[in-house]
Image (cartoon, rainbow, N blue to C red):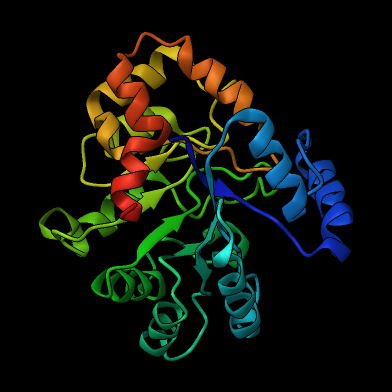
Length: 268
């Protein structure tokens, strides 16, 4: 079973122009038009069995609408949506309870788009409350190709909250760092994060990271804490799988990354 742990879609009315705008800003190629139907078509074509949607809330007032819509996707056979939350939302504990009550298994945060550092007290509160309710927390990590000025989630900052929140001792730690722990900051990932009790998804990594460095991260961190992802529509599942297939990793390691680790984390 192949599980894509990192995808994005937008409402049909705005998806195409949103994707075109973001592709131009980031200087990247889009592998779909950003609609649900386009995602499902690429999944069928590339052999992906389940995709996890990660909505990004860019303004606190979007909380109710985004999470209500997210919950409507979860009746579909091949789609599972997480919720979203903003660090400037008030009543974080109640907001997290709302996400849980909607049947959403996790929450996405994006420090760059939300304009806050990952080691802020606001994000620490979100992570603490969400993990306490058994939710998965996925954070964008490293550089965002559309936002060059400041990196709000660096490996060093994550290492700080790892200690401050005592995540090593947390038996239910389900914190996931996107883009193999930190996009374009993989030497720092190897230094600060590889081997810690955190999950990485490998979205938007193929073709950007040195193959040898990626293998070194896998060996140090463990494939049982790494998961396949594309960041749809910003990379291709087929191309990422072909890249992974050609790396000097064991079949077991590849199986865990492609779906085994995610199945355990998602409880499916």
